[in-house]
Length: 336
Ligand code: KG4
Ligand code: ZN
Image (cartoon, rainbow, N blue to C red; front, side, top):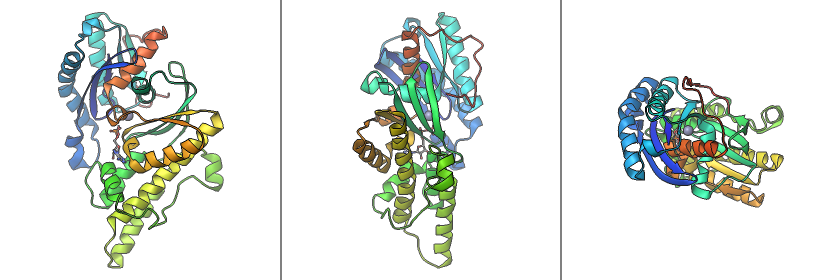
């Protein structure tokens, strides 16, 4: 069984090996809409309310009770501390009550591991691009149970956060990623030349696999202000398409470069932004040209969920890895 509560999704998943049995997820995203982003205190309260219903749903969907599982895995970081603590406290209570081993797992590694449930065992090495409202990470997985390296990450905003902030500038509702994706379909991606952060000169040398989106966000803001000053109506589709192109161009180019540099012939995409049509197009095209096999789990497994935690837990159990101690802490900035 896997339990996830690092951000705004409360998830309880049950797997058997690489077979998905249940994936119950409740999201508090609606409660954060009026704030334009996730409010930690609101997220923690929502986890408290949603946990037991999700636990019951997962058991009913799988036809398996907690008493029958081999182990309980829970996200112990990275994430919002108060939110993580709800899932960790629940997992500890279940582990004690049912006398099950407890595994504290890394949320980012779980995002990669979830692909086992869709495409079977992960070939190694596998590279992974994780892009959501909270993270933007480029990982190299030599062994999902013991050896994962962080090759790069965002130095400012997460990719999804950039989508959400730019959507707000364009008057589109939160969460903005799907809105921009939709608006961009009617726009011209080359209408406005937005900057591609950390892709040239010294920046690229120093940050070969890192990302930066705050300069891009400011460039969009400047464009919108300029057009307003000139008394011109902005073309939301053109701005959306041009912004989206800048984000997805950099994400895909650096990811394929990392795969080639490290001899990774497989690539997993994860996180909510993996649903983006333009990102999928760029990644599939560029990775395809480089002979890299791309694995994109379905959207329900790309966004935060309990099945991904269970998928990693089951890999740890199968490998004979020792369980965590019952005083397992939450680690908001846990390394991979
Ligand atoms: O993984 P996720 O559901 O939650 C976390 O952030 O943990 O990701 C949500 C993020 C939001 O920033 C949302 O705007 C973005 O993913 N997103 C997208 C798309 N669908 C969701 N961004 C771009 N294009 C999309 N189609
Ligand atoms: Zn996540």
